[in-house]
Image 1 (cartoon, rainbow, N blue to C red):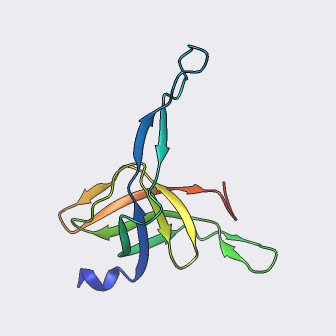
Image 2: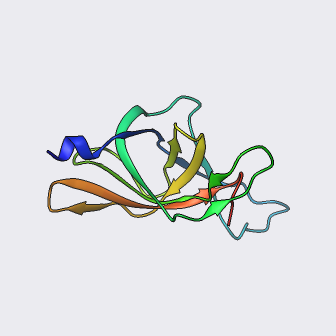
Length: 119
């Protein structure tokens, strides 16, 4: 069953975009400021992270460098730019554009945010 595939857990934080105020009357190039709530919008969501397989040596331990994508059950609410936290390794990612895969699950590419193995 597809439910057995989602053996990892993640927290999802929905983002909010606000306009940045102009400084000295000049427009700011980015124009938007992204913020996240302090508590997850979706907590302990079932998911499956796919890692790139590269091992990064750390000071105390070795760790996977980064997840490159996450699969979530169909119907999970996630948007491009949301923060995804891998609760096993305490790694933070930014979600790319989510894609529905034949009504079975949602595939989301990830971008690494800070920390060990940042590329």
